[in-house]
Amino acid sequence: MEGSGANISGKAEAAEKAKELRKHDRERLHRAVAETFATEAGRITLRWLKDICGYQKFGVTVDPRSQEINKESTLYNEFRRSVYLNIRSKVNRDTLIAVEINTDDSDDLI
Image 1 (tube, rainbow, N blue to C red):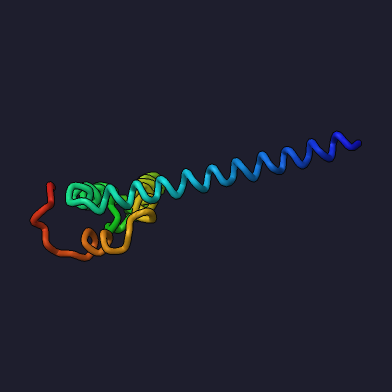
Image 2 (tube, rainbow, N blue to C red; image 1 turned 135 degrees about the horizontal axis):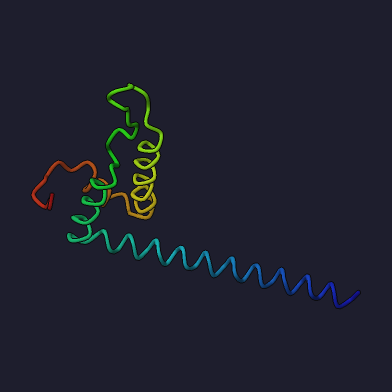
């Protein structure tokens, strides 16, 4: 029985270590994304991603003939938008203001 207690303790330690590694990896990713998009080239890219992912567009699609909501297109739009939202959650506030609120379109590629 003593061996099973040590085994449980070892598993708990391994799980805790794995959790810490995942946290460390998430923090590294967060810093890398924030640093990347803080550059001028990064802001241009982020603005492009915002536009192609439909971040500020209405996601619900209506069939023009039947006037019914097209569920598949609506889901597609929302999944596409979620890509930008995931990236956005890792970008610092000043960069988001420059990309989403700043109306200067001088660095737009589109």
